[in-house]
Length: 183
Image (tube, rainbow, N blue to C red; front, top):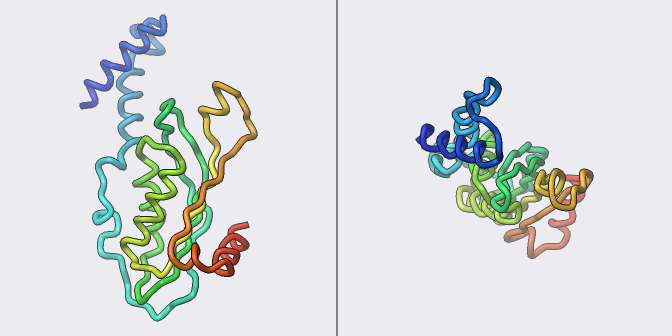
């Protein structure tokens, strides 16, 4: 598969008016193919693999918050990166998720082509699914290279998206506590 993708990159380089055989570009198609495969590795993973049974019984019923999980994803509209951080909170209902699994869930969904709004929803739904929590909240803050490098070229712009499920949607105080903690 890498060779197929590399051949397409070679064609793109040629179509842009460059010589793919010049020294600096000679191995670029293969490097770009490998990079694109890495940046989209989430398609080869499943939630079950990522969680790997790391669900533990707990009496904790207060909010659990994991902040500032870095993420790197690809805008499906321009195939340019967006880079940011993700905050996840949940209200356990007898089960907690191993801490590192939050970052792994974020990475799995982020390493796919999509828009930020959908990424936020996928992460929230995944945490809800594996924990059975009474509520889940996810906020993503990201900078989009498609907006910074092309089009309107606004370098200081960023986007914030959120998804609130269960207790975070239904209870304004719980929602406000989460939003206060992440700021």
